[in-house]
Image (cartoon, rainbow, N blue to C red; front, side, top):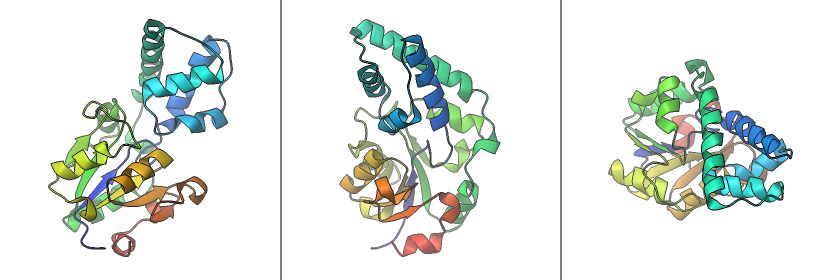
Length: 216
């Protein structure tokens, strides 16, 4: 299916596992509101924006808040999350990431970040990989959340690549859907149980090589 000229990576669960920090921050918020929030519940928040995540959390706990309270709690969650993020180190880069990035760069393939996170730059700086990316499209540059393809289309445009030349790496169903809507090939990171629509599913970037990508 044609030349690969760009690879677009989601951040959480693909390059680094900050999902656990999101979970701990949401759990702390739920406990404060007087209910529990489980890992199963957390699955519903994968790839979902902060405000939408808060609404799901409130629905789980059967809670009603007005807009002002919601904004305050969303901010509180983010502050808690950033406490965890600020302690991150390069050891938290997921296995295989740097090896794959090196292989892509040597082949002249551009690398983009396509993440809903508004904290993406902070995380990339903490784990010291900002310089690998030719372009960073994060939650501060997009208006529409995945499964809308906006984040990936902006990434392709910024790299002067057509969607057909791009491969997306995603760990969330909404992200896979966004990549397919953008007309891009897609590698699911995780389990084919929920990422079955991806063109290829692997457990992590350590299972990906350029050769495998050329077969997509």
